[in-house]
Image 1 (cartoon, helix red, strand yellow):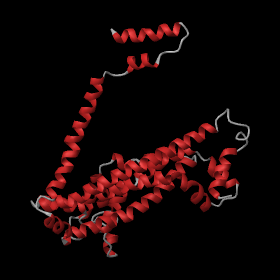
Image 2 (cartoon, rainbow, N blue to C red; image 1 turned 90 degrees about the horizontal axis):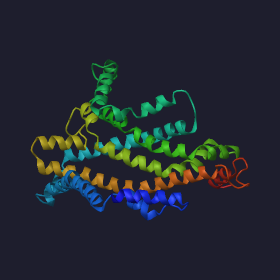
Image 3 (cartoon, rainbow, N blue to C red; image 1 turned 180 degrees about the vertical axis):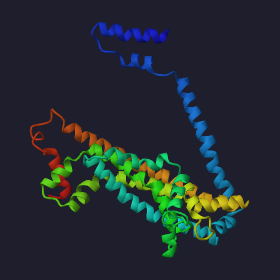
Image 4 (cartoon, helix red, strand yellow; image 1 turned 30 degrees about the vertical axis):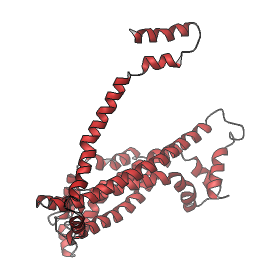
Length: 332
């Protein structure tokens, strides 16, 4: 009944020609306090049950038998080899995916061409295909019985059950992250600054280094952070192509699985705590960089609004405001 009265008051005010009262609208549309508290409580309870408690359990079990056991577990030769292989796979796949992501985002955001939607679909392919299926694809292509298996064997080259296969699997599951962070930002920024810099005589390298890169640096870093976290934590695709050879083709997630299956729980949780710590660091970096990305998006939208009808006479000249931004980036 009170909601009906609250809704009737604005309509009466509108008939009198007076503006609606914000307080009346707030009472009519806002949820009761108990509803907000209930929803917040459900969300916090869910996070506590499925995130905070398991995360705390990982660190508790890791240090349960003391710091000496913890240090011994993460410095053991097989664990150290798994750490090195994980870092190697990430060190190769993340820079390659950063280059691919920038190139793909540049093509999609700055140019119109046939097959643009197909390229976007292919970029999203790892999100829709199971990582295990991706690993099996590489086995069918590069395995001993695969398409190139005999040729690789004749030339004494190994891809499957070796480091190259692990890197390929990691590349496949991580390549959408950088591109997917850059594409919306570069589309919002438009292509006016690049066109203005070209008119001012900038070369291709100058255009990228002094105009494009400063505008996308935070989104690029954000995508790299997510890509690196996924590369270090990937299990499914890497499990298929690695062969689980201890000390040679086991990454950190695979090493944790082996330790747990062998009932070495203290060692398994000790190594797992490294990945958990990586997740926490990634979360902190993600929150910090995400603010910068949002600021860049807002700045890009504000620039688009400034170029809309109703701007000043000086800015209404061809490439007026954009040219000034381009000059500023080129240092001219």
